Image 1 (cartoon, rainbow, N blue to C red):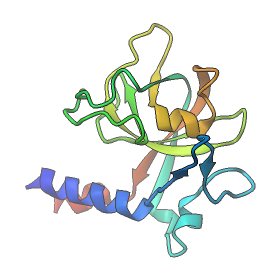
Image 2 (image 1 turned 90 degrees about the vertical axis):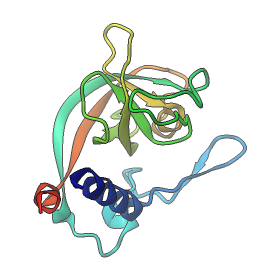
Image 3 (image 1 turned 60 degrees about the horizontal axis):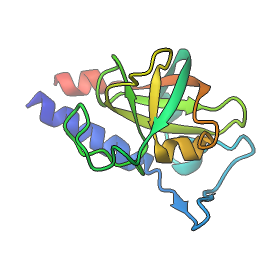
Length: 162
């Protein structure tokens, strides 16, 4: 029963966040942006309570991306990998963990969900989906140091416990 409640709360949160991006034929994303190139929850959801979410700094991580060769295959958590979703692989973070990833070179920021294990190349901490890498401007370089913060939903543990 607890896992059902957790899953429902997670789905409700994802629905509230509602990140929808449209990509042109030239792969240039068309999204409303603020001066900092970040779409904040406050911008996307005018009635969003900023006290609902805490951002816990995890420092910087060396990130790469993966996609075409893995598209449609099962991820470590059992779901099908979709290279155009905002997901990531990490060696030890819990599946379902939400991370805000920021590229300090261009200020672009996105939220991804951990659904896989990896990367399996020494010295790398995070593998982003192709869509996530594209949005952050990593497609050409392939590897970069990125700022990583974990999103914690305040009161979620208490809601799930009841």
